[in-house]
Length: 310
Image 1 (cartoon, rainbow, N blue to C red):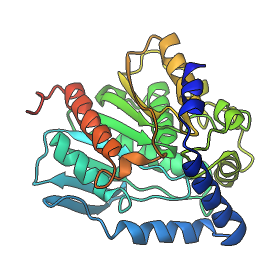
Image 2: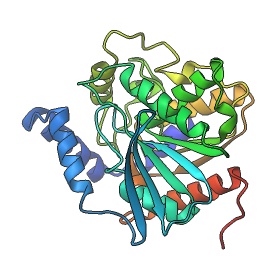
Image 3: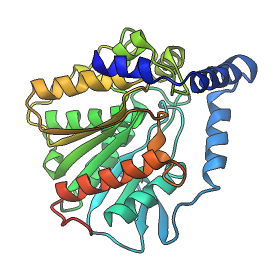
Image 4: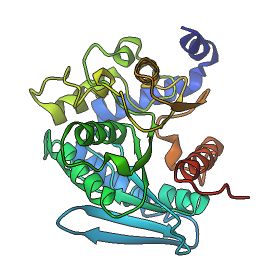
């Protein structure tokens, strides 16, 4: 596998050691609970509200909860971004800065649904909440692009699959589906778990097992609703896949791209040779994140039929 050969040749030893030390500190020394990690991430996110001109409006309705992000009141289209966080972390607040950057780059509003988190809320709580939110926005008129990263990519895929299968409709409102390093295979024998590429990953196969178990409990991991790499994509809208070639989840995303090709789905792939999982959230600090936001903004505008920005 050429991408794995690239990873092994390009691996940076000191970074791999740093991530290994961080995993050991978190699990074996600090014994941090999901709730403690969640609180630390939330507090850190408040230090960076994103670029000037960003508007962050919280929403709590019967049909969905979360936030709507705009930049200087620009609203040329709708991007619905399902946040990641191993089903246990993340929130609209955590994604605020990245969403403002994307809103500025795309001139579209970015919708950030919230959903119930594990371990307090197990499957199918997050799936149900995300499906409800996506259904809501699919009925607001006009086209939308659905985005999901990491576990949010899993939830986004499940929502589209459910909308495609049932009779309630809404999938016709999707102009495209963008997946950023999606966690699309929760099985214990997934390709990512088997290879366990952790040079640039803050988590490894042990974390994948722990967080999958916290959310799924006894639910069948071979079910396509939680391991969407096993699902069918025939008739799906155009898709966008982005991942780092050396990150933990890369092998599963490669498998997903093969599935899309097999099901004759039109899709675009963008990769970074080296990047830490979740790099897209830090455009204020990482050049690779700036590149990702710019590329995603251009792709979403094209899918929505909007002219390129100069």
